Length: 163
Image 1 (tube, helix red, strand yellow):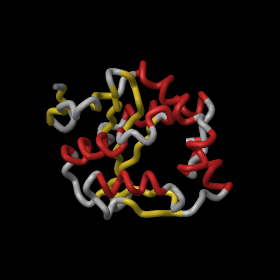
Image 2: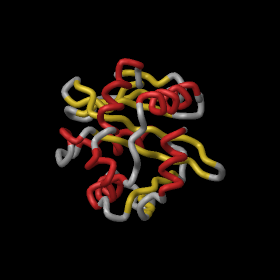
Image 3: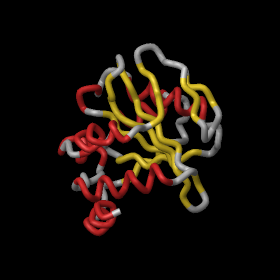
Image 4: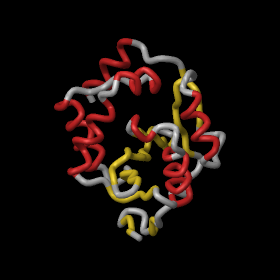
């Protein structure tokens, strides 16, 4: 078991899925995951270039209010789960590499994450057409989390790619 110093909770393994703190060694894997064109389409979220990606993750990892976990399956990096503050609400998001889709990894990782992040309500914005992600959120035990949304506008894509 590991302990998250920001939240002081222990993170036990969940079968073959485990959560641990994000390390810099995880970032190149996360970068490749977010470059997958099918994943971008399904998530309605654009890929960032390397510099934009690193700037984004540097900001995330430097913010003490953000909770970041790497999702491991059989010791291999499968993705990440992140929770951050927005004005008037706390958000949760995740990204799982395509090679782990359809295996229950997202649902198990979200369930474990949500069991330890006790702030409520939590909010997630999920593309309306991303049925698998909506199902994972609901299966993880929080049907109010999934707030379906439409595709991103070109202006939103550009702003997200630069932040």
